[in-house]
Length: 486
Image (cartoon, rainbow, N blue to C red; front, side, top):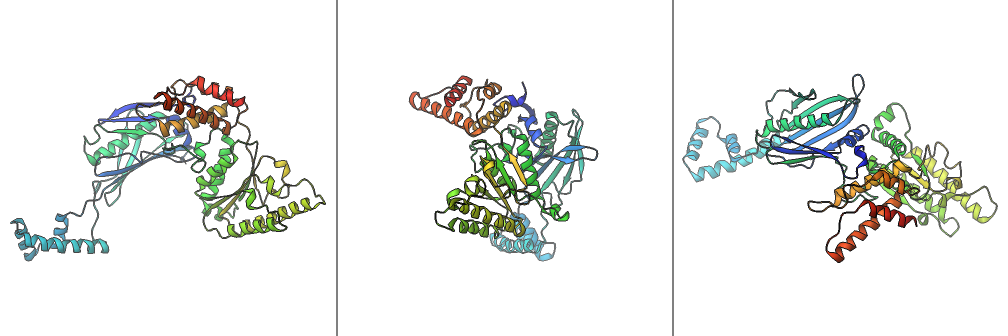
């Protein structure tokens, strides 16, 4: 059974320099690094003077073939401005300085107070003028190469002139990379930390190597990212391409390329169209503005047109990346043919205004991305969603068996990360996600979320009544699926 088949992340544990290191879900982590940088270790605690270690795995175009790039940035505290350093700015080598130094050494409190007061002022002045050279534990160290003999990995180590940052870097061809390479780079990073802190500094500490995207609170529609989307591999890949075009405006400008600014997502209810829109906004780092039908449709003649004009007038003023979502788009602009009745004419007028405003927005403000979602694409006028307005059209289908299993996996792992703790197990260890994918035939992601909600509520009520409840079992999940399907 593959690692992805398990609901609970699988890992390995090893010891290094007295520290315990646990690596979770490394195969999935390395796969994710093919499309997006994956950050590790940022929230770990380190022995002084190390303050932070940022370990990142990402994909790069290597000299011959794509490669995984492992980098680590070790940040240290600068040498503090102690009383001794401040006095050094004042006392110098002249006769008066030597005399004052002797008085301080003899315990003269008045002299000490005077020199320290002058030293504080001098230190502030030197810092302001940039005359004080910040130093740290990595100061004056030469670049080096360190290696892991087991897998043959070599990492280059460089140091910032200030001595407060050490930087490690290593590459492995993408087709050859495996969990053993991540383990090797982690040990090389810990070796570099020891070089800065001392041989016994890591003893008794514990470090967990897992994806930064794993939430510490249950993911919601507001916080969802493309990494959290279960299944829908092709859809997610296309949305990542769009996000990349927003992340590199200089490349777009150099080639005179116009990135997509209109996306139509269509598919059955509950397949995640709104969630994907929010995830795309989070991927871009864009503000999110959702337009619902009542904000546009008005029972008074001309009111709907005015509402659309107002929405787009505001959109033309946005100066930061913004995603505008028109949910249930068909209910805003749908019509079937050119009817002669008043209702059809009103709908045609709304669609016509939308076309004009969309054209103008694309010309005026490249920071805005318009996403329209619908369950009924055949109800939307084809001229409204032609290329040039909506360049990208994405079908979001009902999940198949494998996708449903992946949705269960992502959702359950998110709940485990958010709620499990020492002494509390939320889910049993023997869950069969493939069987859950089969049992939930016909269900959408929204349905699977509801299955988990019901089981969680049942367990919480059991504990409330009896004082304890066993972890959620395979059978309880299957029963909840059957109950929801009726």
